[in-house]
Amino acid sequence: MQQSWRLKLQLIASVVALLLLVVLVKYINQQGTDIIQLNDRCNLSISNCVLSLSNGVTVTIVASEQTFELEQNNRIALRFGKSSDIDLAPLTMSASLSGMNMDMGTIPLEVNQFDDEFVVNVIPVMCTERNMQWKIDFIVDDTRTQAAQTSVFSATFNTNW
Image 1 (cartoon, rainbow, N blue to C red):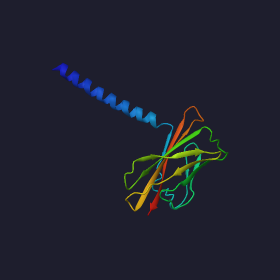
Image 2: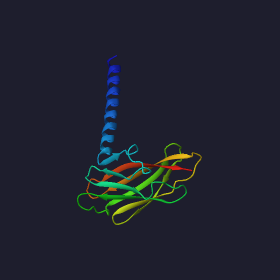
Image 3: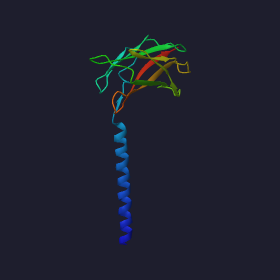
Image 4: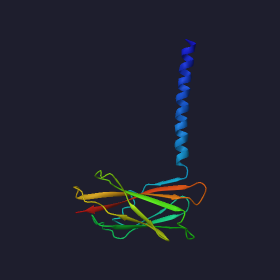
């Protein structure tokens, strides 16, 4: 009987240790990552967006046009800055496009880096949904310090046909 209680206690202790380990791993993975949800506040069909990252850097997201054209190249520029000019060389960025009101899969986007900005080329495809909402996810890796910082943020836009 005592051995059965020991086994139960060991099992409970193992489960608790595993849960603590999972929580610890999640905590460690979140360190050095800004996750900024702009979906409700950053609709590029309405206006450009400005946000601040925790490292003091500001990002301005500028769409070339507020009306996004289907099957055409639409240009979005991300301009990084802070009190002093920022060197974009240690920054890398990737972006992807997905439909919000219709599952269109995730489409990787072309990102080009220039001296003072990243440019994302977006070509939204036509689908059966007449009024489509899209989301662009941006992932920026900053390797200027030993503890690399990753910032993840999103913006939306609309298309109509």
